[in-house]
Amino acid sequence: MSRNLAAILGGAAGAVALVGIVGLLIWFCLFHKRGVSRTSETGSSDPSVQGRHIGVQLSLREARRFELRELSLATKNFSDRNLIGEGKFGEVYKGLLQDGMLVAIKKRAGAPSQEFIDEACYLSSIQHRNLVTLLGYCQENNQQFLVYEYIPNGSVSIHLYGVGQVSAQKIEFKHRLSIALGAAKDLLFVPFAGLAHLHSLSPRLVHKDFKTANVLVDENFIAKVADAGLRNFLGRIDVAGPSSQVTADEIFLAPEVREFRRFSEKSDVYSFGVFLLELVSGREASELPSSNSTENLVEWGFANAMDWRCYELLVLYRLNRAFLNIVVTNHVI
Image 1: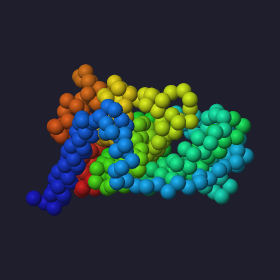
Image 2 (image 1 turned 120 degrees about the vertical axis):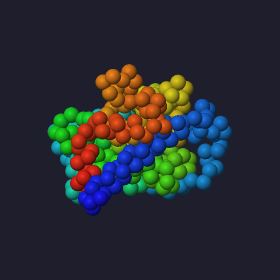
Image 3 (image 1 turned 180 degrees about the vertical axis):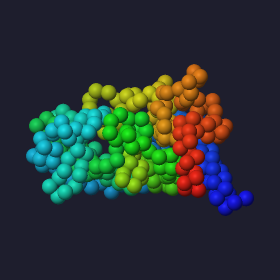
């Protein structure tokens, strides 16, 4: 057997093995929800357990207080050209501070309150390389602002199936596997990375809105989880609507969340499984895996969770010859 052929076969085997590993991770995430308690957000029927486990103790610090004129200058008076999105908190603008730092500024209407400051200080204390950092806040003229670090490459969802100029630069399959496996290792094997870092805090912080649109990637395609704690934040500063109110994309929510309106660490893990399905397949979770399928991607994932070959076929169906080209070019993904 020639060296080139051996390299190709070895690379193909490695690629297929990686797809199989991702398939097993998806199975773990989708079925990890079983046994979740429906009486508390920590998965325990005893709420006091939340404060007794061994976790990361946050040292609360004063978040930076921005002036409205500073944010207006950074966004050219909140010009539509600087508007980059809209989420649960409100409109999101790209801004350039006077010190040269690029930031993402979330803006909404809201009366000044101490609760807003307290929550901003708490969230700004949660810092990790795989989380989007909250830098500070502003509340003036009956408006509230949260200032985050700016992540240049946008969300995974835009790169996978978005519209516009950015979506033309689709995430290569090798980058998808890198993000999937890297995020999975963060979640499952490294104690204080990504979602696991939120779950390791004392008290634990459940994301409650983990989805492809809330995973951003930097210039090196390092995944950063966005909007961590934002659902809790809004639930505490707003009179209307408890924090358990379901407003996320339903397809990402675990069955017990949709039925009982109860969130937990395990419901976050379930959402992570749906994220993996979208990442590997390049399809939206509500989409049908094939033209002759009657199930959406999540239902298909449940039905085929133990058959990693189905994941291989799903990837091949999506990427066709590009999959083989990557193997041949890189030998091993």
